[in-house]
Image 1 (spheres, rainbow, N blue to C red):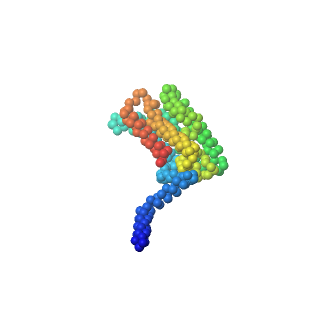
Image 2: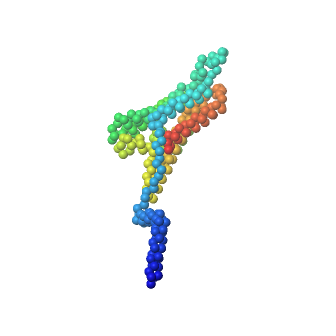
Image 3: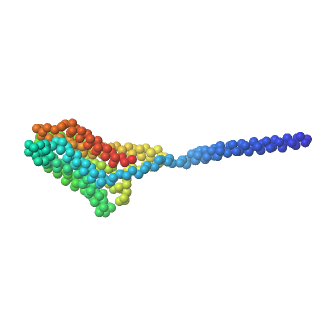
Length: 302
């Protein structure tokens, strides 16, 4: 009987030690299992946590007016360098009758007006739009912006047709055709009858939600962390359309600038004029690549 009393006590002490050791060793596992049970319960109850994405950093980008001003200056400089490659003179020689570094009398002035009108239209539009946004009332702003674009388009077309008329009297019709056809055909194939891409490379709407500040902030589409499948598909479609729209506008703007500033002067070169073809080709390629990089950096800041 006394032995029977000692055995239960010894067995009880062993059980207490085993329970304490099991509790210490399984503390972490029990807490982890509780968290897993919590997550499974939340998932079973339909309370799923929204996905967390890496925050996109704010990349500084020039506004439209600054970008168009820089583009205008670079385009005019590239045009001048191309004209210098084509019409340079040997004014430094003692027997030379030229007093200037270029043969200005060979350059068609209507071609210069045509080039300046084409490369400055976006800057003029950005300047007028900044002024209209600052002084126009909120409710009339969409109508005023559309009217401004139509009036500016009419003025630009009148100047271009005036230049083409006088250029057709001095040059062959094929040269005028080569000047106009690529830009017009590519534009209508890419954008249709819309006049927005002719003046503006941004894809933001002209006016958004009666708020005068957000129309400059919504140039980039906002990403929504949604768990709804139709909403996700609609967001993907919207982002894909925005990407393609930016790509088309950037390619057309950069290629159009390169064609007007670097290729158009070559089309109207007199037949008796001799020039270095490799310099002309390198200038066209380098200027086009630079314009593509600049427009892509402006269209895709992130």
